[in-house]
Length: 331
Image (cartoon, rainbow, N blue to C red; front, side, top):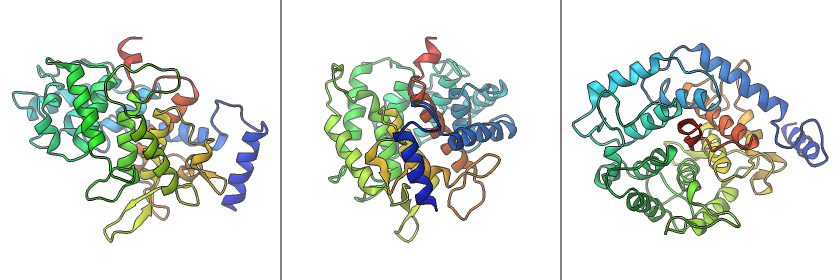
C-alpha cells in the first residue's frame, strides 16, 4: 500500500497534480504545522540537548515565537558553567556550538552572554578534537551560521575546520560516528557543515579548500545507503543498521542545505518513495515523530524531524539554509 501511495505522489508531481512546484505535499504540510503546534504546547525551552536548543532552532527558523525566558535560561547556564574562555564543557565543544546556533537563531549576541564570548573556544582545535568528528563539524556549522569571525585569522580557522572535516571522510565517501563504517547520520551532519563551501555551476570559489569531490562522493553513498522504502538508518547496539526517523532527518537537512529537493531528486527515491515519504511514516497524528516505527512519540525524534521540515520548507520557499542565519543578523 505504501509503495502504491508513493508512486501516486510521484506521478502527481511529475504531471502537475495536487500541489505546485515549490510547495509541500498536503500530508507533509499538515505534519509540519501540527508538529510546530505540538512543540509550542510544550512550554518554554530550557538549555539542553532535548527540549532546549534544537527546539529553539526549529521554532525560530520556522518563523514561530521563542519565549523570551529561553535567553534568561541560557544566560544562567553560561554564568554557571563557562570557564574563563567561555568554554561550557571540559571536553564537549558541541555545548558551545549548540548554544551559538540557538542564540543566533533568535538574534542574540553570542559574543556577550553573561559576559562570555561563546565563539572563543571554537578557535581551539585541540578542544574541538576531543569530541571526535562531532567537534569540528558542529564548530564549522556554528561559526558559519552567523558568518562569525574569531579574534585570530577567521578564514584560516575556517579552512582548518573544513580540512579537518574532509580528513575524517572514509574511503567510501561517508563519515562515521566511530570506526571505519559510514553512518548516514554523521554523513548527513558532515554535509551540512560543508554545504556553504560547495560550488554549484557558475559559482566562484572564496576559500582555498575544494569540497566538491568529497560532497559528490558522499551524495553517491547516501543514495546507495537508502533503504527500499526511502528511509535511512544507523547502527544499533548489535551492529545492525536500523531505520530511524533521526537518520532520515539528518539526510533531509543535508540535502536541503545543498539545494537538493529530497522529495523529487531521483537519486533519493527508491521504489517511488522519497526520503520525505519515509519521514512521514514516523509522524504521530496530532504532531510529533517517533524514533522507531513501533515506538511512541519521542522528544529528540520530534525536534530533529521538525527542523528537517523547516529546512525543507526554507528550500521550497527560496530562503536561506536552516543554519545560514545571516537573514536574522542582517534582515
